[in-house]
Image (tube, rainbow, N blue to C red; front, side):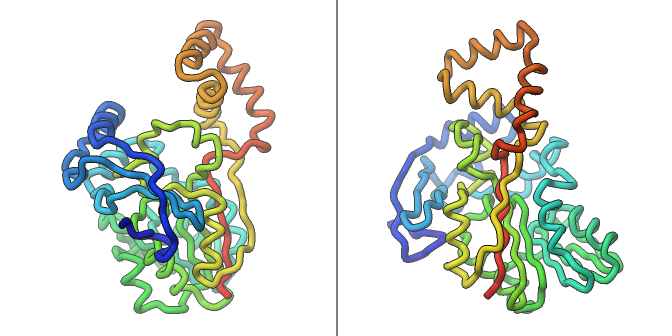
Length: 303
């Protein structure tokens, strides 16, 4: 029986199976990344759904990406954006004298910027990539797992956040528990992830939304379940508006949804031939603020 990695006593149901060969071939074709050594322990990958929260996760849990895998992805300039949409939203919770922890901070762009704008904050970032280790006046990045870090930092931080990290984690219960443990009572937790209720759900073959890259598929319902699970209350749920760099991706997926795989390719060729891309993007742009974009950010308060 497969153990639920989020709500341990909640039953799970098998939703889909993906072949090992599909993952190997797609990562090689699209990103020239070899993942066979990561997937060697399995012949297939299953997607299960938690019947209580709706959280979907990949199994087995042992197929998360290694350092070489992420080094390859980091070669693409779009992979690590220094300032994300959710950074701007979460920034409004920062005040002078706050202690701030970012889990999975990359090179620490967010906390470095915050520490330069607020002179009396103390920012710490956790990152598994040792090359990101850094120490400044009121900001540092250290190499540590949050589960280990939490043991020595119980109730230390006013704010804890992670952006585009949780979806990479297989054993999410211990990860979330450690994030909450680091918070002071009344402290604020911000979690930003891809929104699998938004337009990205129409891309059933998005290889970056599969292992070894992503290990979980989060939705608003699943994120809301975090509150009751870890004695938190929800402050707000914020949906990313459709960003300009996602206009063409959104357009392609909407075509796929309403016309099917074959006709969407025909329409795409027609659009390119008549050079209608710019006009369609302008049309989408006028409605972008009303369209749920790639990500969702949920803000919690520790009770």
